[in-house]
Image (cartoon, rainbow, N blue to C red; front, top):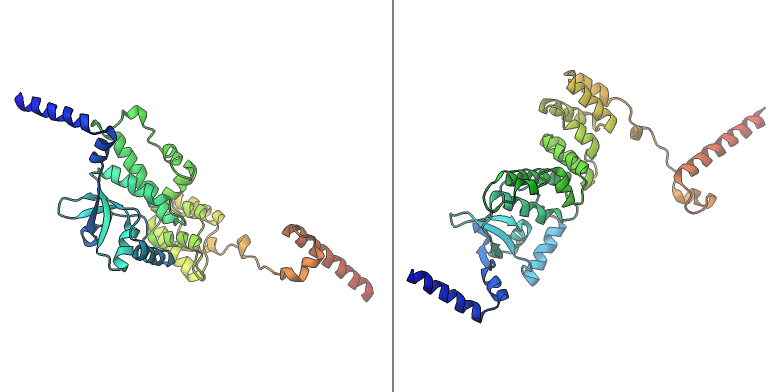
Length: 315
């Protein structure tokens, strides 16, 4: 009883000589310098840490100015820490032989860590479809698990909108678009890489757009492997319509290598032979801003007229 009274007295005295702001600051996590080799990557981290020009620029910035924004880690209990936000900063330190990384250490549940990890990376520019796909799925799963908790840190279930609609309110993508991205997690890695290629736009690499990729995600893994073999052999990828056909055949249990090959042999609008004329050769005949379709129609009419005149002269 006397000990409690003494503790209460000390608390009262402390409140007399410190402001609430000072007491709040004292309880906040502080930045610590942690050896980079003691920081492990987040399990199944969905965001690729690429060795590109942007990474080299970051490494150069860290070398000149240091780490301006501390990473966020959580203790693992074995002297190591788990990275939550800051994988690129960690690699930048490694590239310039900087042995320590300033971090904020926080005690986080798996769900809290996942949500912070995803949110801190979704703000990056030029995210790949595969990155968004697994990130959205991980965050949605974490939100659902949080809703199942009954401890004092959770709000009542009735206050939680555990759905893609809630997730869409926190991201730039609509609920429908998030559904599409999450479907990509059902693709085999080889096909998913082709979806990423559609964003990277690397020359001489096969590419699949998002919407046909979503249709292909409903194929079995074996069917996807057969499709990938056909795509690499024939050097082409399916259109949205072709992908829809494959999904229908798959649902009917009739999709095999022969059917895939037959569908892929169908002519797509973007495979029709194109004839191009350099713009500078025809620009003088059209007013600035003339739509391309109108230019095409005018040229076709002019050629028709020219052909008729030629025939008249030959008579």
